[in-house]
Length: 111
Length: 110
Image 1 (cartoon, each protein chain N blue to C red):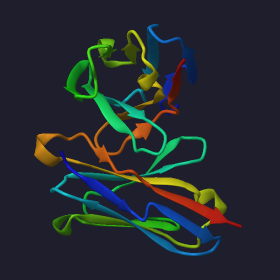
Image 2: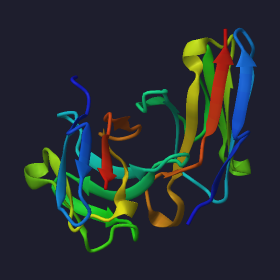
Image 3: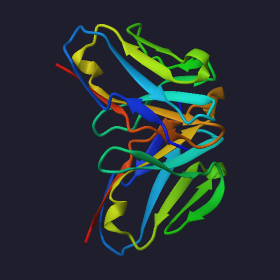
Image 4: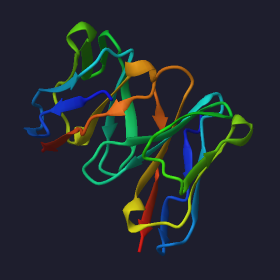
């Protein structure tokens, strides 16, 4: 069990650029979640995959955000035309049934 | 959506003290988890406890689903317990996805 891996750990980008984050879940976990966390707040749900199917998306996930999980393994979260309000910690979690395991997150700073 | 309220928002303890953190939620749930976020930002799952009582070392948790609350007990606190404790609940309105509260920030002084 190597845990949930996220890459990169930190990303600084200029406003208007596109960014992509990767999440590698625990191998036997079929469920994968993306959350976003800003300072002083709890994580906010973005989207959820069961295997390769994206089953739920939050209203927070604007058209500039897209997520994929090809073949039900790793997942990517892309943000197009980044805005300063996108600056946050992006967290990935996986589970098999009950109880999440979170990765260390990707901290995005949009300048 | 479901509302999750955690109290107290902030807590400062001396090492060795005991504490109780509370999570109230606004609807019936079938999924409740407690997490600890350490000062480096890593979220650690402490308990999956949609109902009943569980214990793990100095930590224990109780969920009374019918009354829509859960409690996290920390006994003999240590400086390494510092961080933010989150409650996440789900299962309301047909969605399994947990909603997080705003957390309780705990500082344990030596």
